[in-house]
Image (cartoon, rainbow, N blue to C red; front, side, top):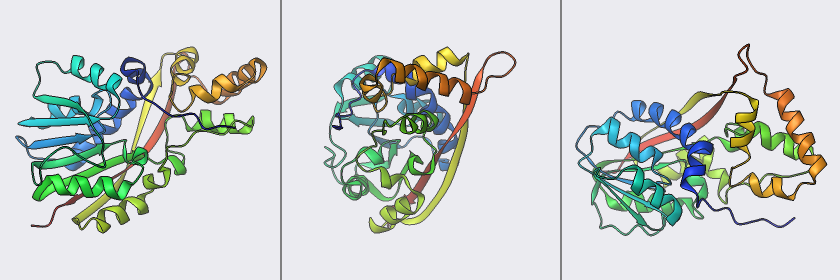
Length: 262
């Protein structure tokens, strides 16, 4: 089976699929990070601006530069955060278009497993952050079952349809993050697990949203009609609703932070 290219071009669709999860994880992440206000930030792999918005609301930064390789996501982010102190541009996490020591903090929110060379991406964040500044990230614990739609991927695999993993999926493991931060020369390194829950109004709402995932939709499209219906029924049995019909379940992410040596 060929591996389709995973793209994130629809910012609005991605908001329903992952934006809500991103904010849930981001709230916990920023509470743990506890950054001072007024800083200069670079948000690497900003997507549709879900975490950027949290950063603006929670941290009162003086400036946010946000970069992403998908113009469709950036267009959504620009509209979402119009007239806010954030600048969005097309760019590559492995070659940030900024000067050395330009920022007080750099962050990758749910991104590091998409960077082809994670070590290079972390090195670039270190390069653009001033001595004493913060370099941090959080990522779904995909290999540990923490991805928000892991149950769907498991049921797809049971029907012979393997999930599409990000190119650097191993970078989401806690020990891999620690190694990356230490290898980049960062100090005062700390890591933690972030656990959260999300509710959907009913199973049909969950199913409609889950099917839009950029790593899930291509595989679903390859399934025969009968297999697709079997998958839906397997998921309906697995995602037990409460008395009001709501579907609630959890996900987990690994988070890390460190400082550039003075």
